[in-house]
Length: 195
Image (cartoon, rainbow, N blue to C red; front, side, top):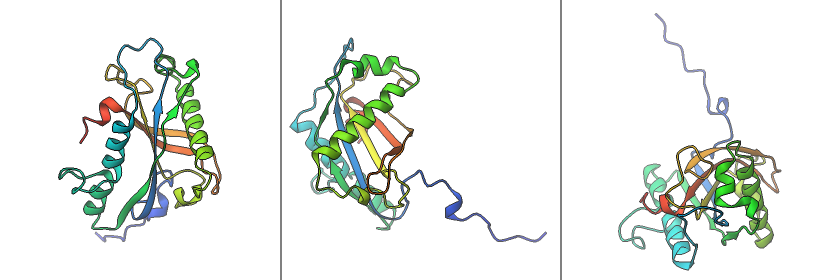
């Protein structure tokens, strides 16, 4: 029996995930949603923003010994994968059509995708000097690594749109103005217990 060389190369895999080596820019957007009928929720403030900034981009020295997202991947990849980027200002949604209750009630996820687009567009408008093409290293028209963290509480249920998950939104963009394909969604209540 003759063993052939592997025929799968990295370009055979989809480009909708962030590259696994290189200097990757991460965009984190904190989202404050109207509450609706939700009984359990959080309110973003400067302390929670600082916590998220440290959780993504801090060092073990600034984080009482624990690794951030960036420092963990730098160590685990032997410094072949480096994350930088920004935790944006809080996107405050004012339309009750995008409340915690309204989004979680929409099992098609279309309200969630509309919310993600609104949050990203607002972030771009509020940061006119950012070169958004830097967030699309593989130049496929999508931000390589985009994370949304909502104020939804711990009573959200598995498979509801605001439950922590990763998926694809298919919100097209261009290299100079990238959209959202692969994204992650979390909430402050789940996020703070993950370290």
